[in-house]
Image (cartoon, rainbow, N blue to C red; front, top):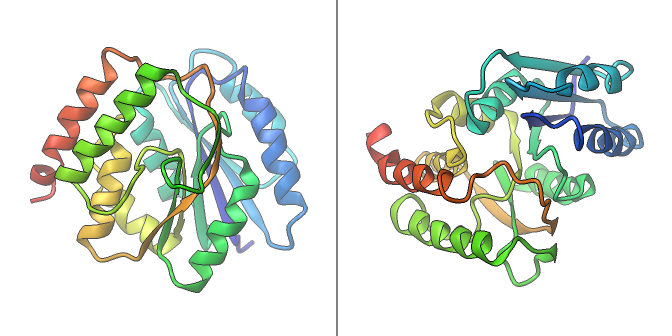
Length: 235
């Protein structure tokens, strides 16, 4: 079967949030006229994430990719994106902080004139209904300022977990991705601009999930270091 859309969901110990998200995604996709698949890319979960994914997706076209050991969100997303066969490929966080319905606007722009469309919480028309706490939000803004100076230009929010690609662009960019952690988004945007892909940032609805996997005092340091070495990784 030829799929129009592949939806990639990276997971790590998501047994509490994943069932509700999978139900919402399936309900949306079943109403569409096009064929689609869901890809759960698990990053070494120690809970029932994989078992629940198999149960919830048994009657829907799907792939479940399992990594035995935790490698990082970037690794899980890369595996899922490279396994996708849809003409367009979306990756979305397991908590669906951005509602799946937002993908309709992204697909319209991809069909028209873009190679990748990335969600943004930082544009004037973005609708952030539930904010991160002050520390996380401030660190996120500082991180993006550093990324704008060092890795890319003109993108206000590289870290929103809702991005959609033409499959050809996804295959090229993710095959070159080298960062396995949370800063992989910056690398993908950097590569997209380096190779001249048409990139559009769109405002999204976003509701923060309190169960973030980012460790406030550890992961940002790793992410800043990763951003500083992106250029050397691709020189």
